[in-house]
Every structure is written in structure tokens, then in C-alpha cells.
Image 1 (cartoon, rainbow, N blue to C red):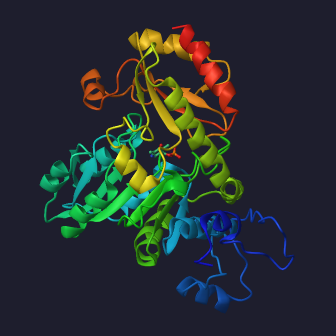
Image 2: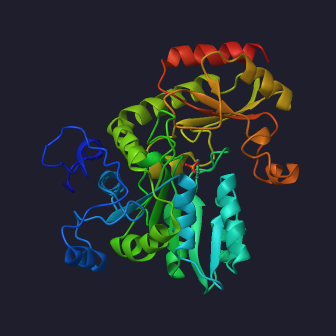
Length: 391
Ligand SMILES: *Cc1c(COP(=O)(O)O)cnc(C)c1O
């Protein structure tokens, strides 16, 4: 099974068939499991076999299929699924850390990830934030008590690409584990494990579902970490993924490669077509040769991703006029959906930050984050060009 290519794993890995040999994965919508005897219940609580479950907060056959498929795709020994991407981020960090530990994280993070780092501070974990693209800052921030390094491999919404391999070398030299939030890279373009990442986290809400239906998350890593460190924390704190949502995500994985490659092709075409447009101050896309981290993006993802960030001239007023004139592209804050989605970070996802903080992160008033869907690319380009005319 390990020598299958990703597209085969996306369809087949982790499948467990019941005695009915159903083709499509079954939804085991059950919280508990019946034991044949008191002795069996006792022995299962001591140690459960691979086909034995106790309680859906600990594990469930449909959820297990999703976990095994994700581990197979990511190239890790195991995975643990969670109710949302944030439950995965929180679990990955909190399960590892204790008071007195130190964490180094890239400062350009999803707002809720920054919030989780703030909570860690309340419990005596010290956090240092660095400019993720500056290896000197990573080196300087590392200490003997640094236990973990946390980063988004491609930052939101400015699409900076962090050199994962170099950061892993710096962290490992100090004995720290590297946790990569890989949402923007997607499992399709991820080489995080080959680059040295110890733990890879996804919000499955994004490309993995890909149709805007449910929340989900997953943490991928070694068997020792997933089963001995993460699972005890998550199974007792209640972030379990619903079996129904696990089934939705399994269906999403079947078409993930097709969707993400189409989205990435459209992103590149739109970025190329819009570069130098008179209504745009900037087109940011790691797949463009003009992007400052283009070489790193190509080496570690082989593509620029599925999101393009545009800086509309005329600041917030210009950006709003552009968004309001779009017909096909929807205004919303999700990404990775089959539908093209656009958002204005300064007034939505990054509203909580002060103007100076947004400045520091390069989030301008005219900036919009454009997540490419799987619609016809000519239609999308037409929609965007028409809307830019309205600016
Ligand atoms: C969306 C997102 C999350 C959180 O995922 P949810 O499923 O919304 O909880 C975490 N990190 C990144 C980079 C994201 O884009």
C-alpha cells in the first residue's frame, strides 16, 4: 500500500469494509460499542486492537478511515482527526507543552492560531514570534527550553512562503519539534514530512471537504506522538470529529487531487493575466516568478497554491467596490471551496489586529484574498476583469 501514488491513496487508503462489503465507506453513526462480555470490555479498556473501539470520543470506524487515509497521503505513521482545524492546532500544541517550555512561531498566522498561542502564555509557556521568512530570526529565537516550532508554510493572506526545510534544521539542532499548519499548501502539494516536519496539521474544512459543508481537522505524525502524546489529550478533552463529518471528508478526499490541481491552474492563469493590471497595486502569487519566494515555493510545493492575493488601488473603498461588483466569485471567508471565494482581510479575518500590526504583516487596506474554485477559468477571469472595471 505504501508504494501507491497519492491519487490512488486518496480513493482507497484506509477503507474498512463491514461484512456486507459495501463499496462506499459506511457511516458508523454510533457513540458506543457493545462488548460480548464483561471480560471483553475489561480487556478492551486495557488495550484495544485495530478493529476495536470503545467510545466515539476516543475513536470510531468512519473517523479511523479518514485518519488512516490522511496518514497515508501525508506519509506519516498515523493521524488523529478533530472537530475543526483549530481543535487540531490547539491539540498539537497543548498536548506537547507544559509550563516553562518555550515555543517559536512565525508571526504571520491565522488569527485563531495567534489566539491559541496567547492562551499558552496564560499557562506559563513562553512564545516568541519571528518573521518566518528570516532564518536569522528563527536561529536567534531558539533556546535550550524551546520545545516546539510552529508555522504556516504559506502565510495568510500575504502568501509568504517559509523555507520549511531550513527551519526544521534550525529547530532540530536544538531538539525542538516542528509543527506545520499546511492548509495553504494542501495535502496535494505538501512535502512537509520529506522537508523534516515532525507534525503536520490541516483544517479539513478547507480543500479536504472542498464543498463548504462541514468543519474538520487532522494532525499527522509519528505513531509514538499521535497515540502516546496527542490521543490521550484529545480523547479526554473532547475535540472528536463527528463520524458523519468524517464520511463527508472521506468523500472530499476522493476528488481532492482533481480539484486542487484545477484550482492551482486557475490561480496561476488568473495571477498571470492580472499582473500589471492598471487597477491593481500588486498581484501576490507564489507561482509567479516575480514572487520573492518563488524558488522556495516551487521546491517545496511544485506549484503556487490555490489562493491569489490582490492589492486593489484606492484602498478599502477600491477593494469594496471590486468585491461588490463580482457576480460569480462569492464574498465569504472560507477557502479551498469548489466555489471561488474572496475576502477583505483588513475588515474580516484580520479585523482584530491594530492598523500597525496589519502594517507589520503587510496587510494593506486594498488587499483581497481570492481562493480559486473549480469553475471555468474564462468565466472567472471575465468576472474579475468586469469587477475591476467598476473600481
Ligand atoms: C482555517 C484555518 C485554520 C482553522 O481551521 P477551522 O477548521 O476553521 O477550525 C487554521 N489554520 C489555517 C491556516 C486556516 O486557514
